[in-house]
Image (cartoon, rainbow, N blue to C red; front, side, top):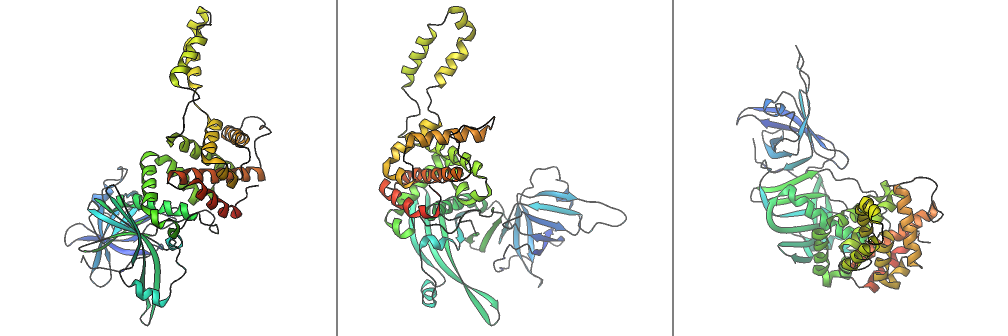
Length: 453
């Protein structure tokens, strides 16, 4: 019953007729709901499946091979990934309608082997066309693209090859009607890995283009092509919650000559400062589900991570040896009994005081970016702004007692958040190799969509 190809399945909550094979000829029927944008998947069985039900205490099951039935005596191989038993029911004398159900985090369609490794994978995202900056699809353009699409940019970073592609496919809506589906794709190739393990590097690359376009891009289809046909990966990706009507910072035509440099800079950040990238992209794509205070806390942490990562920033006020000598000199003036009782914690506190805190870190970042970028962020006095951001971070982290007069509230809090967002993006763009004057110009274009004053 297995092995036939089937067209792409939209994960829209529809349940698919499926079968779990106990032997080559015996199987248990069930219904599979693929993971959607808003919910995990589910597999419900019409009969008990002892090999699976016996693992109800296991956090996750090993890959579960199934077949998606086509109602014509055939089917397509599939595999449930990261699944676990969500219920196992028994009743007498009548059996419950669904004695066993699995919660499913991800599904492969096109292969029953969840452990198979592939040396390439593709992420399809129609929104990516905005970054490619292509005005529209005409019939002539569709013919030009053909079935193979076209490559717009490529980069080779270490053992990973990254390409940006544009394509179009024909979808049959009705026997007498067809529709063109236009899309952008990210193609990656490198050391063989499981398709589910390709999902993160693909999403990481998409996050770069989301940042540059200032849009909340989210993954669509993830797939690979093998000698037996196309294998697709279905998983839940959180819905984007961020503004869409914003001006891009940089689009592909502007960075095409240095595409490889930008991708290499992003790859270095992913390797050396993955926490920074996570904070930045989570804010880029999901910031509207946060309160203004939580947005400020997220961006303050993001800028702390920028400072920690940057080789050009000194994390201490003075050289460590010099500071230690000053601490020992100060402790030498304490009376001996007092020093014996309290010297250890005083020494530790004084040594720790050499590390720059948030206000000093922000001042260092602002000084590094220069007056042109600060002006684009509408920051006129870096020291005052750094102090305000520090007071706000401290208050909204531990709101004890009345806030200081410098802690922004209401409209002022929104302004402070947007300035921090501009500052965080500027710091990361510099890490990617953009000149400060380019960054300032891009932020000025973007500023009309944000409340900065």
